[in-house]
Image 1 (cartoon, rainbow, N blue to C red):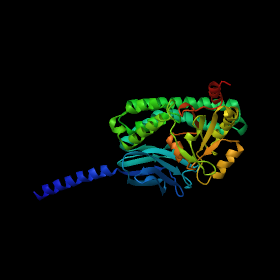
Image 2: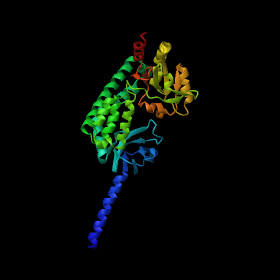
Image 3: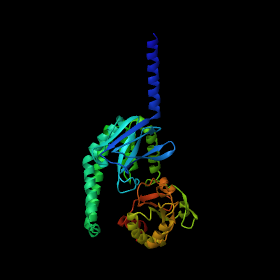
Image 4: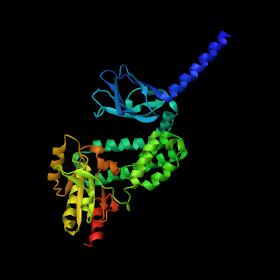
Amino acid sequence: MKYIRFLMIAAVASIYSQMLYAQANTYFINGKIGELNTPAKAYLNYKSAAGWQMDSTLIKQGKFSFSGTVPEDQQATLFVNKSGDGVRSINTVSIILYLEPGNIDVNSPDSASNSLVSGGPLNTDNARLNTLMSTVNKKVNMMISDYRKATKERKATREFKDKMEKTRDSIISEQNSVNYSFIKDNPNSLVSLFALQNYAGSFPDVNQLETIFNSLSKKVQSSKPGKDYAAEIARMKTTQIGAIAPDFTQADTSGKAVSLHDFKGKYVLLDFWASWCGPCRAENPNVVAAYNKYKGSGFTVVGISLDQQGAKDKWLGAIHNDHLTWTQLSDLKSWKNQVALLYSIQAIPQNFLIDPDGKIVAKDLRGQDLTNKLQEIFKK
């Protein structure tokens, strides 16, 4: 009788333990990557209740491990660096995985770039998506290899630039096709939510995104990442063409507070850029030409810089060197710039054309597209 009672108590304790384990979302990452050894390091970047975290550990004889708890299943990034000199080094390989309860194995017989992740339903789903994406990823690697092999002179030619652009567009189209098919076939998987974010790209069609998001299961939509992305979609809708541009106030180069509503009555090109952004700097001459042609006709530009603390001199230097004589604003918080967050900026350069009544009438106008739009408005 005592033995039976002991078994019952043990069973209840086991069930209770499993309940706590599931609630805590305790994960154990076990890695084995070839024969990597000190000073090689592994870094785990994830979001805890306190915000973004970066854990690190040495790799010894190819082995490393992480363990911890997270509030909810989530996507994380594992970085492997054979030199142990941080995640920004050229020696770093990044691996996407999911933190979920239980054991997560990361294995490769040789290099980190050949790692396979297994363990748990989310990592299983992600492995399936990676398999579907493998052909596209090979094309990405080929494009990167072609770019690196090209001489500086070759890279500067119009022919090479057009080739790279055409290849990139083709790859993006294939990636979108794979992601969309996976989302359609796996509406109950959290991995589909992250596939949707990849599908969205830098300049998303918010109405299409909302339709696809609504096709995901209620479980995925009501998860913390799901709620966060629903809020992001709602923010995107506030900056659609036809919407009233969200107002804001930010400091100019001298520290003076400037608001968007200060420019009411004019056409305003709200231009997001940064001194470190090569494509932005390449686009600046087009914006300068448009500004100089139409500034006397009720048109102006307001620049929002995604430069960061400690880089104000670089920001000011770029303004001077590129002859940007219009209003320039920044809180020097890089991608956390409050106006950039308000406008859901995912990539730069990006811009919004706002009419005299404060309504967004066009967006993402670059090169000749900007000139054509202004000619249409001002008839000259």
